[in-house]
Image (cartoon, rainbow over all chains, first blue to last red; front, side, top):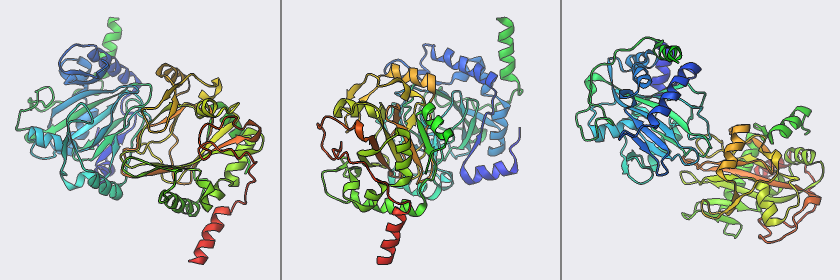
Length: 265
Length: 265
């Protein structure tokens, strides 16, 4: 899978690419079962809401076979290697369940801001992939992007320890207003299996999930290998320390897992 | 303006109709200026957030000429008279500004639930119109509907005095989950001038506005005249007591106001 010249130009201009239904229903089923399995685990990487509902499973590619394969999936890896022009390692891997009714807001931020300040990642030569496991709609807290906001480097930010349970470097309101007045706002929504690639400096936020349905998204944060982090302040399962280049698997790596399981059943 | 047989069938099935860009940019400009004017007023009908930002101007059609005309606009009145099969009066008229960054969530509710419990409106022979003054998107707290949820009458509800500053009869989570599993969720979004007509028993909610832009919607709640409220507990400018049938004006009533002002300027 290679991105076209038009897609590369679009990414450069807006800071993101939306690939609707990049994964099939059968592949999404494998990942949905994997999410249920990791959320049922009692381990330090699996964080919960105060009511016990799953919130985030960190580093799930290190203890679940389907997520291990997803973390090396060619449909995700090749576009990122193309955009970052080099080999990549996994900086962070999260399975995020935005809880029905209670899933919280994420204030306006840049991911590279956190990676740079907390982990001393040298440059924004890194990016995010969001893979929808559930439908994403205006009702369940979609990602909201400010197109073009990746072009101005890292903005000043304050360390928000209050709004959400996860510490976040968030932008001030004047900056968000100025950027949105310039670039507008977009909320890519769509069916399960859809994929969003976005620049590590793209300013984004997401509203709460007021719907009665949990909304799960898998996030892969991939970093060009020479751009690896320099500081190991956060746990290794939040900011990974294995900088080995990922070797993409075959395109049917998830489907073959489903077939293997069906044969075994 | 008459609704087609297809539109009538759609309303019956889903409980709402979306009419994108029903009003022109010139008409929206008149209403935007009117909203700014009423928000600048110091009167009891104009409610504010704790930081002073405008929140709701009640009964604006009684003290602003553009809103007076909008409250009798044929593009809004005739469809409602057709759907309710009779003449209508204005039960409530609100100009709602969902504040940038801070605009609050509205939990799942039915408007008729409030009108029935608080005002003793006898039956749900009444409905809502939402007219977008600003663009409505996933980022700024769109209305979320559960299609078909208007068909089962009034659900039990608890009086929520905490989540938002305006008291609201809200549905329990089990009911919302069941209804959404049956009917799904929709979030009609669109350009200024777009209109949403929805049944007074349609279950709806809206997420917070996390965008840097205020999002203003004008709400007309129209009631068939014989179905007028029986109890006058709430202020007359929240639940009106003038049950005179509204006589629709001409289609150019807003444009002619703009032209008159341009000539005067």
